[in-house]
Length: 380
Image (cartoon, rainbow, N blue to C red; front, side, top):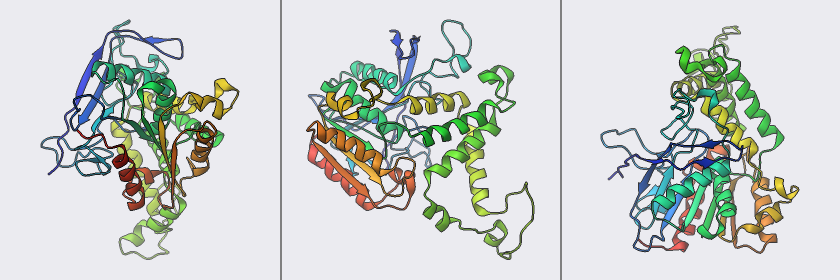
């Protein structure tokens, strides 16, 4: 039987100061919960999402068969994060385009859509907003905070910003900061968006346009980095579209414009789909939050010094073919935590799927998460 998910929203009137020096007032956070909160409110697990995900973490919406949450394989009754034992909370970050206040919403100070005027937000800002939501739900301490990729950065930041409120931090396929190469990928994607003639300086809503060309390219760039070379070769190789339909393998069109290879067609499909539902300003905001995250920056680059504030237990997971958030980046975190004599478990999964592996069903990966959450044992 499928778990039914129910979207919720909470309005906040208290001003939220941001790291940039700006602030937000009159903002809302969209969220979903799964399972039941126990009597002493000690079994809550917060899920932090990555770039293009949302608060819809698990379950399906009533009457919608194809609406599974993005981590539905991980979270639910009898799954690795068992909602028969834990109360799971998925929150949509500020600046997103899936319900929480973002660039598509009205700025209460001007009465106009924020657009490009939405303030820059950081991982730390998101964590502060999430903490306010937990306060409103009456949850003082989290059994665990968990996320993959950018969500893993939020989980790590929770352990540093609110060490007294977190018992376990689960950081998957993540890093203590982005490499120059990663920032470069983000910048190319952003330039594709801002140079789209339909972008209009971020105020495209007023012009009745959407910078779909830029969004398509941004998604194509990102998607390439989420997959491993082995997976792309196994799935597509050098197969031509005509060959996939029974045509000859050497049946080239000799065209510079048309998609000839299956990998080209696949990337164009992913780009087209993304441009239909994702907001361009949100893409700029979230990739910037990725770029800015660096808890060691104020400690002269000393990650061990930065992580000394953390007091919870940690599980870190990485994947061997993830070249965007390579295992060596997780090992940097592990080494810094061990230097501070923290309780750390680490799993490096030999999986072929690249960065996307954190969303997939590798049995070893799922087994690690199941064992870890079983060890926490906070029954509902």
